[in-house]
Image (cartoon, rainbow, N blue to C red):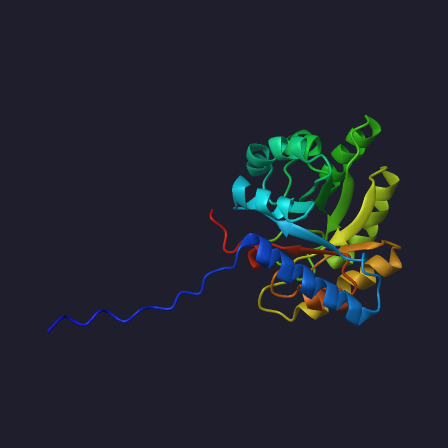
Amino acid sequence: MPASSAPSVNKIEHPSVERALAEVRARVAAAVRSTGRGADSVTLVAVSKGHGIDAIAKAIAAGQRVFGENRVQEAIRKWPALKEQHPDVVLHLMGPLQTNKARDALALFDVIETVDRPKLAGILGEERRAGRAVRCFIEVNTGEEPQKAGVHPGAADDFIAACRTGGLPLEGLMCIPPHDEEPSLHFALLREIARRNSIEHLSMGMSSDFEIAIAFGATHVRVGTAIFGPRLG
């Protein structure tokens, strides 16, 4: 009598990049419609950190043109050739930026979302005056978490004013809520800081909560895992 085979284990596989991207786009569109805002009022930033060029190329082939990376050195390994092939691609830096990497970042990134201290703001302002302009968001540490970068909410107004005085091309605010707290409270806080400082763009919301972020006024949502699957490294 033949030995019985071991029971099969059902694996939950991530869909293809193209299919996952289409699903995320559909969810973004539905969330935007529910707010009554225009269809183009929210930019989907596909977060490709920890993923290789092949996966990124699939997303580009599917029409995605805005991407995000967390580390300057990782981006330098992956993006120069891709941006040369696809000059309409826009690349966001979403991780901490060391001041000694500022020029490297400016050579590759189109948007820096993590301006969080006067020294960095000053360097970026100097680079702008030298003709190397980049669009900037200020990162606000809405949860005041000691392990995270970002300006604390109580200091945000003064920091925004100082950045503007220094000539920084400031476009928006960004936040990453604590993983164990209700994100809507943090999205509402960021929206209020933006409102009172007349700042148009809000980068908030990730794979697990981008629809909530859109309801609270996000103009940019940063989605990685839902598009590319778990990070490879």
